[in-house]
Image 1: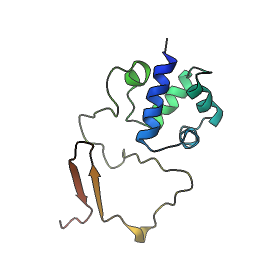
Image 2: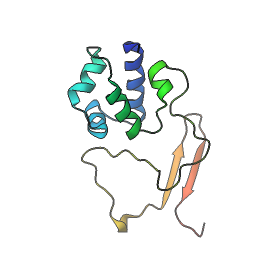
Image 3: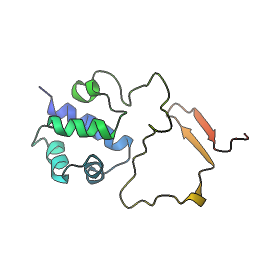
Length: 124
């Protein structure tokens, strides 16, 4: 049986990691907003359907971690995702960039102070 309090804590970690409100998260995984609210308040336990939708929409969530806390989040992959597998959650009401607004450079900052710099210019 799932410990609801611990599940709620891990769900809040996910919301914070992706910088999503409960409403935006519900929209992404295609459940009613009240479902998230009831789970976060402890009124309801997450259903199998809820967990399945969450894992489908957010592949970085490890099933064992979300259910029991064993493992880590985000889960580590042994190989980098292919370009077709890249997942970027889009917040509601955010605009999709146009072709002429091409990404030039991405810098990822890690909590330990390190970073990775990716240039989109193939000549670099």
